[in-house]
Length: 163
Image 1 (cartoon, rainbow, N blue to C red):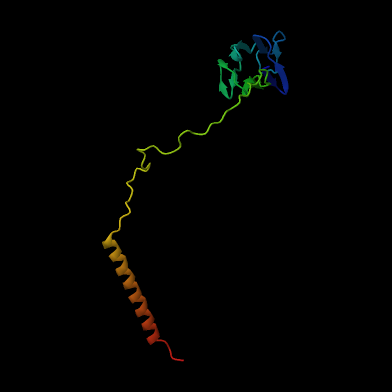
Image 2 (cartoon, rainbow, N blue to C red):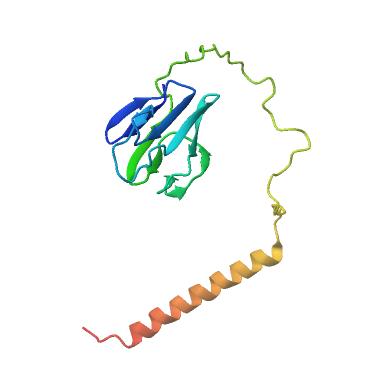
């Protein structure tokens, strides 16, 4: 059942039209000088309530925004003048939960890639071909590296102090 919580007191909303104000003839009485005698009303609209300000002196705000008329949602903060309130919709679970359904699992009939599926990449795939020119470059670089290392060792041996 929806509630309007004002200063720690929960008021269950049971009627189709609920009046709020300082006057004793209201369904919800708020004893605060900033609240008008007939400040606002809540009217049921299906499963929810709509809040309507009754041209109050200090106005009505919902979540900090001035409101003349608006639908209320769970945990809305309402301010009647200087009086703070919170709207709690029906969260008690009065409706039954849906029944669980048994799920049957079947293995896939076909799990192989389609015949026309070659590659999902947008980039062309490099073909594995032996390129003799590239191989010759790598062999030449290897020989140059070995010659360089050999010459460095020879230079170091020439200038090494004798024991």
